Amino acid sequence: VYTKTLEAIMTNQDNRPVILTGDRPTGQLHLGHFVGSLRSRVGLQDSHHQHLLLADAQALTDNADNFEKVRRNILEVATDYLAVGIDPTKTTICVQSCLPALNELTMLYLNFVTVSRLERNPTIKAEIQLRGFERDIPAGFLCYPVAQAADITAFKATVVPVGEDQIPMIEQTNEIVRRLNRQIGQEVLPECKALLSNMSRLPGFDGKAKMSKSLGNTIVLDATDKDIKKAVNAMYTDPNHLRIEDPGQVEGNIVFTYLDAFDPNKEEVEELKAHYRRGGLGDGTVKKRLEGVLKELITPIRERRMELAKDPDYIMDILKTGTEKCRIITQDTLDEIKNGLGVFHF
Ligand code: ATP
Ligand code: MG
Image (cartoon, rainbow, N blue to C red; front, side, top):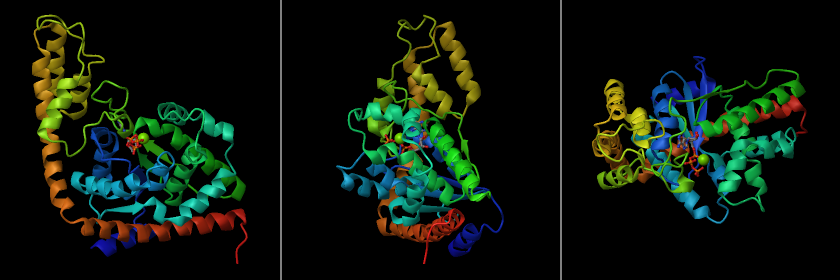
């Protein structure tokens, strides 16, 4: 079954839309990934040709002092994928640094992008500040959106399920696509669309704007009951909601943001919000509910993850097979583009 499906992926016999998305192996995946992108990927793997890229080369652009961390986390993130329900018979999983065609594409694309355009990218600006790179930006870091354009276009992906911070990367990709198609005089590459979920930027449990590995404010997908309790208890609520009978504010109240993202019973959440606004509903009660909701979500993922972690060879095999298939797909696109542009070859 595995081979048959992969063959279909490679030739795209049934014309299903192609998805390319991925994650930086800089740490375990967290609830932000889950609502921002993972949940959609699990839902889309039947109706799309889906490829997941472990973006280790991109992770190195701001982890040049920590190759070991990036290498180790390839297996961790792949395990997370399988634990949440990514099915390797439907989705190919590959490792970015093992796909040399992506580097060649990046080098070609860099000729079609200006440095000032790269510096205008709002996500890059924010990340430079966060990492304290203002004085010394690694060139690879500034250019990673171009490498990301290479990733997406090498698969001719049209759908990219991502969080909000990735919108500028999709815009940059489409600019490159248009520029390249114009240069070649033919629609060699398709434009792509970001597919945003209804929670495309989950705040950290500390209230910071984004849950992120780099900020250390994550709830990971194999968090223990104790971790969950600790994180929920640390969440800020409405600072003016001092006594239970006081009316409380729901907007900007992170506990409600999380209930909106994770509680499957939307009606009850709306009732809770109304009650909280009226007064008479304590923070402790709302937090207890959130704790329960998160435990229910995370427990089966954690248990599945523990099972999977017993057999790392099985996961490495999946990565190897997936990467080999993707090597062919990405090389095909590279050849097509080099031909189109008129790059010398023997
Ligand atoms: P790092 O801090 O190393 O950049 P990260 O936590 O931002 O890690 P990435 O690997 O950069 O995670 O992101 C992978 C995908 O998950 C992207 O599509 C990104 O938009 C999405 N994502 C990451 N964090 C969140 C979040 N808090 N809410 C929604 N989506 C998110
Ligand atoms: Mg990130």
